[in-house]
Image (cartoon, rainbow, N blue to C red; front, side, top):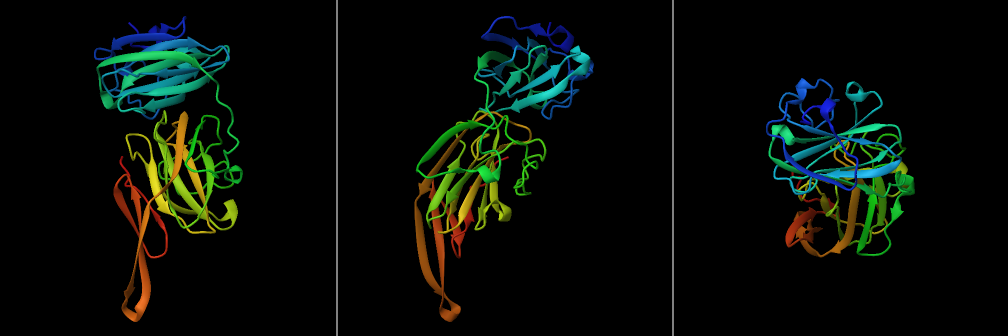
Length: 311
């Protein structure tokens, strides 16, 4: 019944939970009303729709418990299905399931689309519940990076209201996984001490991206050391060897337009140093940073070494 936007199921009680199957739903091209959310593909995507009226509160929609790779997209409108605007979307933040959070303005209708990634179909579970509204993070620009002064460092935050990449004075071209003007980022800073460190977003509720920059002169002279996306499913992880006296800026963002609640974990990793001589008797050494019983090698003076990208 609700396989078209105009037949969206009204959500009038919360928390809301329903189960269904999108196998026989109409392809999106029939509606001719879906805005271009990146993971939503017309002609092949079979979707179902729900409708929530805004009331100045914040909500989260998730497909936890679904049996196929789902996509959740939120559209807002004041003109029904003919005026949809893509507000937010998520694909597979936790194995196959998806979840997005948003602030619902009073007087605005929010259409919730549930579909399969690249045309996938199956049994879905949709849960919608009220959540705490996110705040603008204090560390959404490099110059306000949060200092990491205790280890292990564990924190939770949200990038939903952070400044978009490219709209602050420290945005760079380090990240190939983010979209300038759309991806939203937060910053942390770690002072090097000749030890190896690992940073991870394990446990985050959306598709995260990590990057590490180095600097000896603050945010005006950042050098991109590297980045990681999808080290473990949709969360990110990196490890690197630090140099004493150097500041390391840790950048946390979402893949594409993804936003949500993230977990950030920073900890010291074991290192091994092998010193030997090369021709002309010039000392040369190798730094081994150990991560999850796997060895990452950095040759020469301590530099950065990263876990492989998995996308």
